[in-house]
Image (cartoon, rainbow, N blue to C red; front, side, top):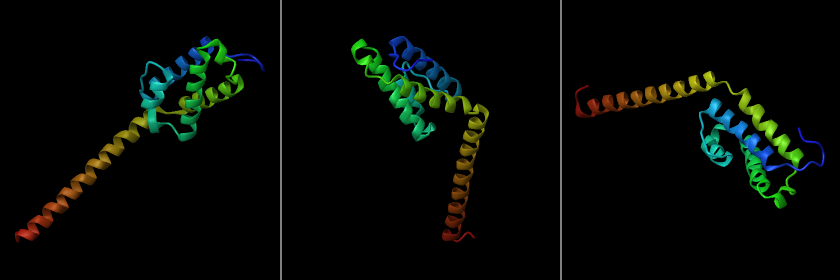
Length: 130
C-alpha cells in the first residue's frame, strides 16, 4: 500500500497489472500480454465504470515506465482504480457466467427452430398442402 505523496514505480504498476490480468484470465477466460490487450479482449463483459478505471490504470502503467512521467501518476487514484477493478473481478461467479452463456445459446437455438418451423408451415400452407 502506498502512502500519501509516494511515487508509483514501474514495478508497482507491473505487479498490479499482472494481478489483474491473472484475475481476468481466471474469471473471464481472457488472456493478454499486457493490461491493454486483456481489457480490450474482456470488452463488454466488464461494466462501463470498471472499463474506465481499467483504462486509467492502463494509462498510469504507460506513464510509470518512464521515471520522469511517473511523477505525474496519482498513486491514490491508481490504488482506488485497482481496488475497484479487482473487487469486481473477484465478485464474478465463473459457474454463473458459464450457465448464463449456455442458456443464451440454447435460447437462440430454440428461437431459430421456432422461426424455421413457422416458415415451413407457412410454406406448406402457401403451396396448398395444409
